[in-house]
Image 1 (cartoon, rainbow, N blue to C red):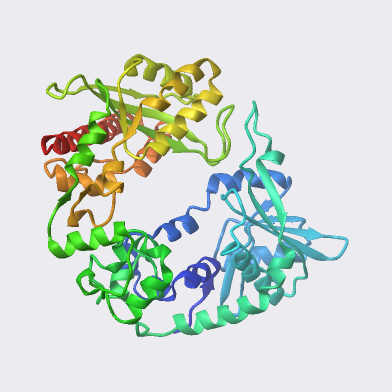
Image 2: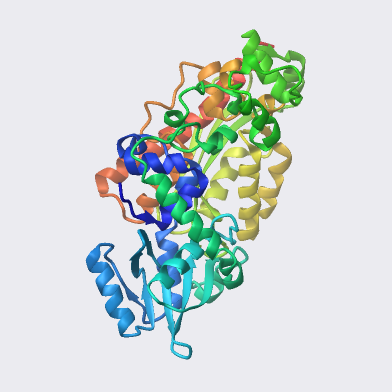
Length: 496
């Protein structure tokens, strides 16, 4: 089978060749599989970022098609020495790429090639190879490439009034780094074409078998059917112990109960494995009691929802600063009382920060422990609000000493259950300790979906009926987050 290797598939191939084989030969399986975080990062290149970055090149011409007509139009503009092209399409030697920005240099007759990234830095693991692939292809078309650049967001930029496009982005000359890789990338591209042209699935495990679970490709289970659903890959932080994991895999050890005694695990890892093997719940009641005794009533079970805008929308924001648009809080006045629910959701298109903070001040009072899950997130947002809204700084700073992270109970392994599978996220803990509560039936089931829904609400992506329904869905989702925390606290409290 003759295939055309796209730039995106080449980058994915470098991460996991078998996964791309499934993408090309078994798209039914690939499309049904949940995308890995790596694939999401490749796909979500940030259309908004690219559109804004094009403003750095006034007068550019956009090639909108990817087919043969798009290739023909591209060559027509190249023949005319069009100064700036956006997304020109090139195909040659079974390779295909659309170039973000191609700029003609009349002084040399060559070109500058620019790759726009929605990141806040250069990723030397993928960005250089990405550009080297493009440079090789452009040279196949006889183009002289003078310079290669990465354009990425400037994390130090802080918006004031209108967007300052020149300072929003950094343009980094990576010509020498790219040139040093062109031969390697050329050879690797040809190897990828040969590998991906195979009609039958390549033998053996996919390379993700040597990575922790969170780094597995989307088709991992199809490539590695011998690996159980709960395997050594799920051991906490095993991906950071590459030699340890490699030894296990090279000896075909995938089951937790088969780990030999000479493999030394950390205390946390060993606790997870022991709990699985013994099928026994391990609870440090005295330690949990000590944590809970240090809390002060009323207890405020609090959760934030935010949107990470790549392009700062409001004054005081930098790229990817989280816009806090919603919170939910359940207030428990005593261990025997029922929680009282309060909520905030900003659905206008202006900056929610001030009204968000004022509403918090109204409902959190001045005393009582504030219980969150993974407190670094909420505390980080509080610090940012304190900087952006000076009049709220005193209140936001006062929250720091009141925040307690309920996740610590599980991170410190004061409560271990085999069904946690080494995880400490609320969605791992809740089904085990409070099985009657579930996110499965909700329209919105995770923070990413909540952020995307809010963005559509405030940017006009919904009609009135959709907007009303989405607002209700957001309230239900965020409300469950805080009630879930209360329910987990209650389940633990009852055991003491």
